[in-house]
Image (cartoon, rainbow, N blue to C red; front, top):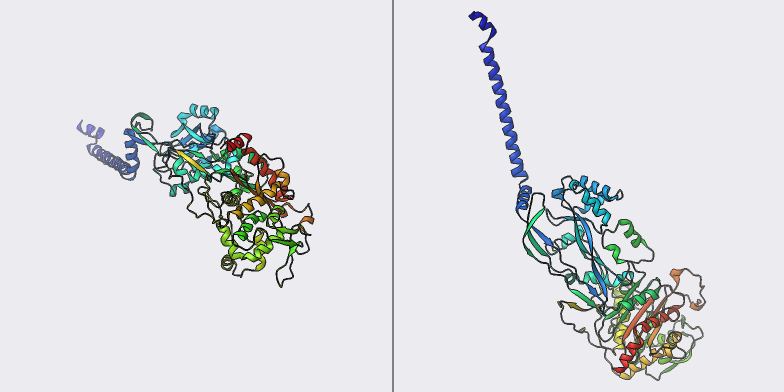
Length: 624
């Protein structure tokens, strides 16, 4: 019986099986313990920072509150730059899990194009610090908001929030004067104060928006909140409200700006009008312009490429950056230099045969009127824009005295206070040519400078500034856009520290004013048609800037009218009104305009003068 039982139960075999199973179990237990310790090490060492952040966010989080951007008004209180409510879509990468899957779903829900996912993924990286939401899209419509709300459970880390976006009611007319705001890029983040711009997605890019960014932006606020693990706010613990940006009031007259933009009719042109007494820029217009509102929000690459590659260059500010030969508009300045420096007097006359010839030189420097103007003095030479008289005067003055005297009016310098990116033009001199071209100065180049040709370059802003100084009888007031800010945070509105242009004989200045009036109101004036019927007197000067040189045998008046547009001359006008009490000084350049300054630029200037010097304004001036 015992033998039978041993056959049914083998203790040794059972012991071997038990030991094997025990060892296997121990190996399994130690393996699981190893996995557990590995996981603990991974979580506590390699993912320490992330889980500390999440742990802190389970308790409290600090959120930035972006400030409201300051508004911009014109001199009459009309709104030029506003903030309109909009809805934006943001993504927090740490809460989103698989960012690409979330982005793909967003693009699918919003029915975006094929490039949407790549664009939004790239935008999701434009952040300052961990757990800060990145702006993906803005200006969402109601249908898009509804689709995102219905599928919110599928979109971790995605939020739809309200914000204020910049809006420019005047559109194209003020595009170059105001500039625009644009999305903060990764390049911006390398130079920006990240704390100052926490929670802010836009920054001033050009114009006033960029120059006064430090005033318009304001100061960011903060709030400390309790959140759950998903980042959902449970309650606000404490907060510090943001400080809104300053509201700016400009010297700009938006009604005049609009009139000027419409008068240019989309032609390539630049115009600047200045109030001589204050230096305030009443209008700064570059045509054609662009709609600055397209830069606020999600400007796609194709839309920007169309603007950038447009042959009309709508993004180029011709008013402050376009550099052109000033042509005959400088003749009043050159004439004044001749009087003040004693080279000529007010009674001097000369005979004009239609050309000027340098001593021992066979070349003829021709007047625009091939047969000349007969006997001319300075007064008549300005009125009829005689070249021969100014060739002679320039030769007597010499380039050294011309260059030095013109710089007193701001030629060759950037003198505006707050016009971003304005260029200085070029006032040539003997030293400049030697340094740049490694060549001596030739007498013929002095003659060209005497009629505003050759190397001489100016911008509409610079020419308007010089005209304003002339209207002020040599007194300098630095041109500026800003009139005041609220709350005030600027230095006092002081005049430029430039010395006034010296007046050796006030009668010389009056003589030049009278000569400029004859341009528009004299019986021979080149712009007499534009001055006809005016309720006030205008002092001005027309000009035509050549874009290519003529040979000795060619006559500009006989050139074919069907020549390519880029070979046509520029039309220029400068002037101020009323002549006896200047309220507005203006400079205008129309590129490649058939007809010149008298036929193209002067009529535009007259209509702008009329728009500003309304009967009511003229009556007010008379009463004062």
